[in-house]
Image (cartoon, rainbow, N blue to C red; front, side, top):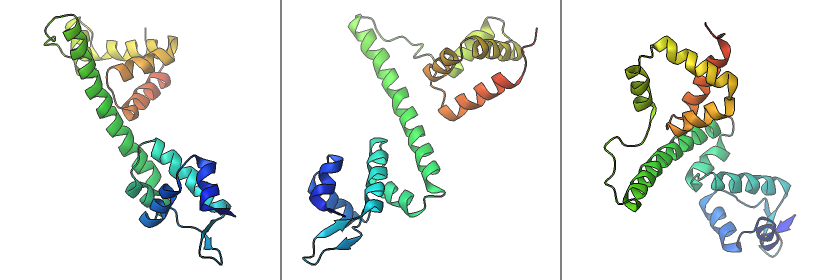
Length: 177
């Protein structure tokens, strides 16, 4: 059993943070000592470890409370929702990055915008690639450089769920000649 101060020190948090978590219903102490002080058990420590992990992933306390209340279904939904938010934020940051780079070079931003899945597909089509050719390209890329293939798909701003799908079918079907 740990006091609120001991638990806070173990996780590098402030006592007021744990009081707030209690108030929000995210982490309620297992018991109270005779003096009325909060006392935390091993299960509370494991719960706080999860809370800290979910906070680092960017989940709000309201979402964390839902996740902890329904650990069988909600975590995947909440984490997938967060992943989609992050992918949107990253795409926005990439756009800002391209604009800042263009401004630093004293050039107006390109009307082309950042490279994305649609633009890449249009470029390949304009170069004479058929749908079948593009599938072969993916399969070859996945076979020869799987990590670089994954990184390239992420560079195009493709959501992680779709990246996994592309890579899965790229691995399944044998390379056509």
